[in-house]
Image 1 (cartoon, one colour):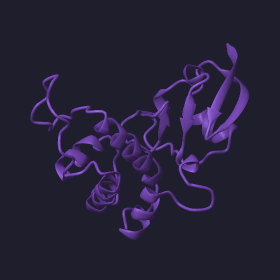
Image 2 (spheres, one colour):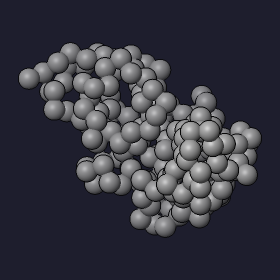
Image 3 (tube, helix red, strand yellow):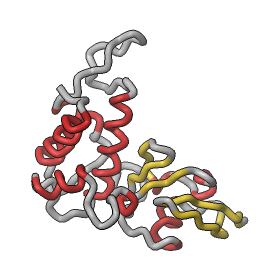
Image 4 (cartoon, one colour):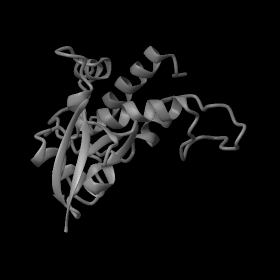
Length: 176
């Protein structure tokens, strides 16, 4: 069965006819040509396909394209500001937060969405106090590592990824 859907990706609206079983990852990469999100494991375990859907990070390999109808989707290609890299992208480059680069688009999308989640007060598994009236936890290296744990880096660039994310948090005034 096929459906006609409208996807709003990186500020552009596109109508597509897709098989109802087609993943958002395949639609974004193969139909729309945004190759930033990668097909790593195709099981939602590595995070290489992470994109933002209405500001929240998702693994696009487990999300059906039809479920993203009319949602705002941002891939790594939509983060840059014109020809200039976004601040987090600049930090990743400057701090060597990548080696092979395969996971980098997903890492950056996840980190940006995570910073918003943290700013909204969402706790993590290492947050000491998760009671409803608890203050927003400090964003330290342990919090960042836990919050980004769904994005794997086979090269082991984690220390630099954490540094770049904390630098971005400091720029936004939300780190410890």
